[in-house]
Image (tube, rainbow, N blue to C red; front, side):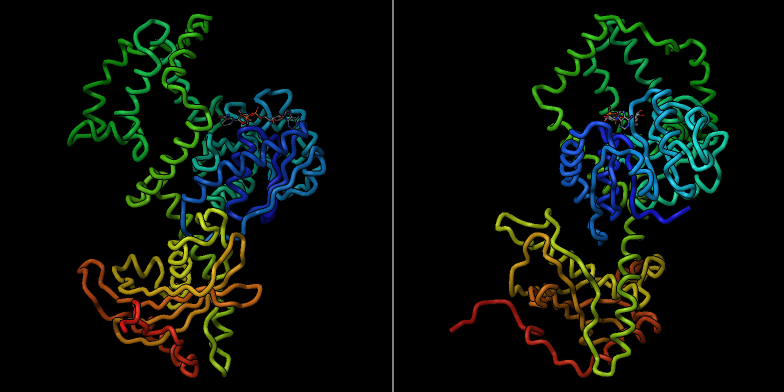
Length: 499
Ligand SMILES: NC(=O)c1ccc[n+]([C@@H]2O[C@H](COP(=O)([O-])OP(=O)(O)OC[C@H]3O[C@@H](n4cnc5c(N)ncnc54)[C@H](O)[C@@H]3O)[C@@H](O)[C@H]2O)c1
């Protein structure tokens, strides 16, 4: 299966738009195809709308954003894409027909995945050419923020296609969950449907309003579900003997039963109650406003979960680790060549550009982003000398103890920048760095940062000598740069001159 540089989208509605935003953000080009030409404006709007929340998801260094193009020629899209994600309406015959046609134009090593919420892959791949490269990859709305994607193979799906799809989705920050066997509704929609069916019964029977039922989740189980699913939570509810006790105690209730397996009939009255109930909950807020609120808390929750390395937070951590590693790998040849040059050079560690969301009300890069960019440069250097995730897991790290940033010129939106770094001094426990942030088009100096790092034993919370190999690598860089002049800004204090 091929490396994915261009994602082809078949259908660019709510889900197609979500896929586009996620893929573009992580550096994949997107070729979006829809039968309706007006969907071009829609998908561009959807991508712009997602950008705010997505840009706050992680501060790890991102590759340049992908490019979005649009076509109404589905076959042309199939010929050019490296991976195709189908997101057309949930109708079996329509999907079968379109997938079969597209499969005749997509090269045989291009994976084709369907976002279907509940149709079976064996049925969808029935008329396709090379059906072994087809699978279901079911995402969740908003696709650009929720990492889950259920992967389901059909009768003809090859393990290679499932593996290639899994790698691609992981690359764009997702958590592929392989479903062992195809069943209608896959896993999550089956669970969601069961809950929704009970909601419809409770509203239909006049037991509760939609708002009360949402409260019954939001103030309780919903908070638990983001970090641990129902089963692990029930294991905890059983006390010391866990799930066994839980089943002994509450298992008999399943015979009563509390729940009703058949959905109630969707009468006009029930529909009205559901609609009026949710309108009351929205309380005058538009769908867009509610989406923004939802997106903001989804970002915040994932960042909290990252601290505990569970659920979606663990996925975010793994993504960030990969982004830092990737950025380090890009810088590595430049570092090696700078170190082998006789003249000694500052190390060029980071290539970036001012992202639109980095710009403040003055139209320039905002203060906190300078620290982010300098921090990314330091991170790249540290990875190169061996202070990486494994090193940190071993209980050792380099902590920032001082930073002095000076600003020389403004950086405007979309401007390309790079950072060069000098190691000014090293000893057993300290590293003294000096970074310059430059504009790529004319090499103008935009800002500098002088930083002191202290090597610590993280468990003891105390300064401790660094590993000899790390120290030796830093020393090698310092020695190679010994001929460079000490920058004028180094060692300067902040303040107005007192006359
Ligand atoms: N909406 C959700 O919450 C959600 C979640 C997960 C999965 N899904 C699945 O994703 C798929 C798409 O759902 P959606 O909500 O984005 O639907 P949607 O109605 O918002 O978008 C469907 C798009 O497909 C286009 N289209 C229709 N026929 C086409 C054709 N022959 N060729 C190309 N494009 C065509 C339409 O113009 C439209 O833009 C469905 O299979 C659905 O089950 C939806």
